[in-house]
Each structure stands twice: as C-alpha cells, then as structure tokens.
Length: 166
View 1 (cartoon, rainbow, N blue to C red):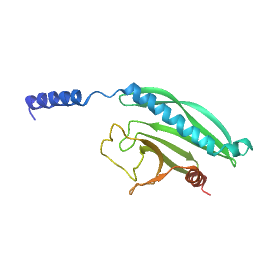
View 2 (tube, rainbow, N blue to C red; view 1 turned 135 degrees about the vertical axis):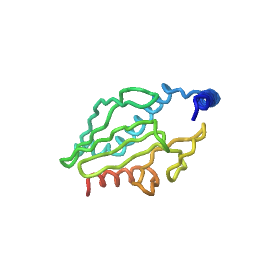
View 3 (cartoon, one colour; view 1 turned 90 degrees about the vertical axis):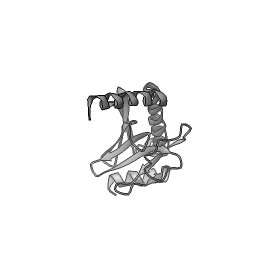
View 4 (tube, one colour; view 1 turned 120 degrees about the vertical axis):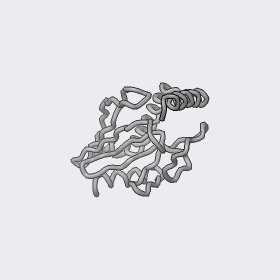
C-alpha cells in the first residue's frame, strides 16, 4: 500500500464517520448505568423475600470500568451472600459486539452471563441495531452456539442455582 493509498483510505474513513454521525459516548455511558440499575432492581425484587428473611445478604461495592471511547467511569457490583457462598454480579461494559451491555454473575463454582440485547433477539446478531431498538436483559448460553434465554424470576433462580453448582 502506498502513502497515497493510505491517505485516501484515511480520508474516506473520516468522511464515513462524519456521515454516520459521531456517537454520543457520554449519553451511551449514562444509559448503560441506568440499565445496570434496572437489572439490579429486578434482581433485588426477585430475591426480596429471601433478603427480608435474612437468607440472602446484599452489599454493593464500587468498581471502575474502562472502555474504548468512553474512558473510565464508576459503577457498582452487587454481592449476594447465601448458603455460606458469595456471588458477584459485575458489569462488564457497554462497548461490546452483539449486545448493548453485559453483566456477569460469578461464584467459585460457576458463571452466568447476562446480556442486554434487542427485545426479540434469540442469539448473537452482529448487524447494527435499529435506532429505535427496544433493549431487554437476557441470559446468554455458552459458546460455540450462543442463544439467549428470556430473563425473569424463574430463569434468574435457575442461573443462581447454576453458579452455586446445585
């Protein structure tokens, strides 16, 4: 590739970026932080009776994420203590291929990934989402054949049992 080819390529990329419009990374980060809270609110609602009974203890811990284009920002991970075990729900990020965000649930016995994907999505989609896409949290199965499972109280309970290895 000659210097002229490189200059043409870079000029074209700059034009394409301007034509598509720059992403508003601050808005994307703030939207992501709202989706994290929405996810935590659902988890706490689903576990509320166990929390009230003292069977599950919940704490939050500040963490810092660092993502391309967004930079460093603060959020929280949720820590569940139950049956002498600790389970963490940790946001991974929003700059991902095939989803708008991911939160991992981990314990010493296992891991489950929750992904924020288009509402009707059944599996990985590498196409750019529509501007008006509705986003929904789902459970992602493990590779190589990744599928998405609807996230609700029952499927979350199943995922919790999976990371407890019960």
